Each structure stands twice: as structure tokens, then as C-alpha cells.
Amino acid sequence: MARAWEADPSALFERRLGKSAEELGNSDGNDECPDIWQLDNGDVAVIGRDLTAVYGPRLPQGVNLAPDERLVVIPGNMLRAAKKDIPDADHIARRTGRALRQHPLRAVGILT
Image (cartoon, rainbow, N blue to C red; front, side, top):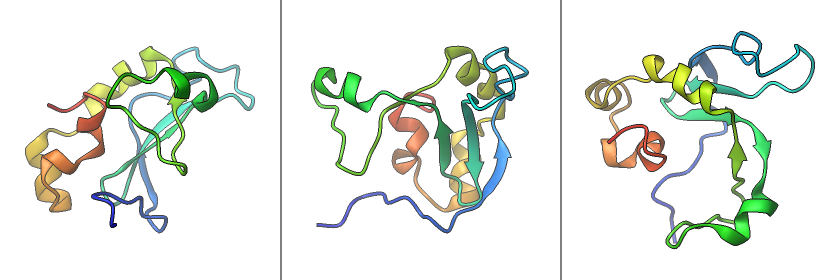
């Protein structure tokens, strides 16, 4: 059975959403740098702590993780700082040709 959405491994990093971890005080500039990036196909890449093993057993009802998915956690201030860089629904639909209901940001409650 085909998935409704599949990550495109050929997509390239286009721009950071929000501020860097260092700018937000979430990193000392070494190797712990959570981040949020828009890809050139409109999808979003999130770099965070992999807490799949911790949160997997206690997911809310109706929330599922596929074997090839990971649950990552980022600092809340990082997502809030990215809000101004997240395009509205009309912009996303025009740019990607994808309906809003399919956009990954809707799944996490950023877009409604």
C-alpha cells in the first residue's frame, strides 16, 4: 500500500526556519545543535534529540510511528522562533502544488 506522503531524499536544504541553536542559547557551538530547515520541495527537516524509544510506548491514542520514523524533540523556543518563517497555507499550496491537508506542518499543529 502506498503512503499518502513520502520523504524525498533528493530534496535539498533551502533555508533555516527561525534562528540557530546558538543564537537561541540552545547550544554551546559544539555538536549539539537542534535545527529546523525548509527543503526545496517545501517539506521540513528537523534535527533534534531522538527520543523514539522513550516516547514510543506512550504515544497518544491515534498517533503512530512507522518503523522508519523517529520522534525527535527540539527546544520549544526554537519552534516559536521559526513561526515567523513558516509560510501561510496559500503560499505553500502555490509553491508546492500540494494541498494544505497533506503538508507535514499541519500534522504537528503549526498550520491549521
